[in-house]
Image (cartoon, rainbow, N blue to C red):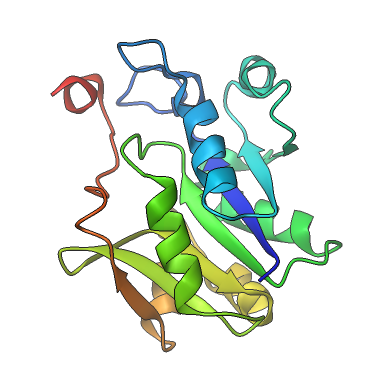
Length: 190
């Protein structure tokens, strides 16, 4: 399947104290660089990164990674604004699906992306990772769903409501990663 990774990295990271696109692990690993590599290694044919807060600084972290960058100017409205901007940017592509992931999932692995991608194919695909029964990311959105997802997305809910009203395959990945997003410095270190 021709799937484009769509990395949402636009938020201000208020509880983190800085935009999450600018966060590095204790070992110096950039979260945004790691997330791009996970999508690339997981089978995405390309990656689009949606930036917002701190975009001028974050874009420098993406140099040489071969990604497309778009800026969600309305990023402060929540994750849905980033998702809509990202999906809109893909309309001119030949991608059959978008693999939506978040920058604040430092334990996400390429194996998770591969597993979720293998669940559904084509432009009708609708699948998401689950961790011990709890829905998470990444989410595979077939092209046929992009418009509906964009129209239904509000605030920080992203595609949640759309996915709950459509047959979405839950792909168990708890054996590969934790699926927990990191919202603060305290949760990032322990």
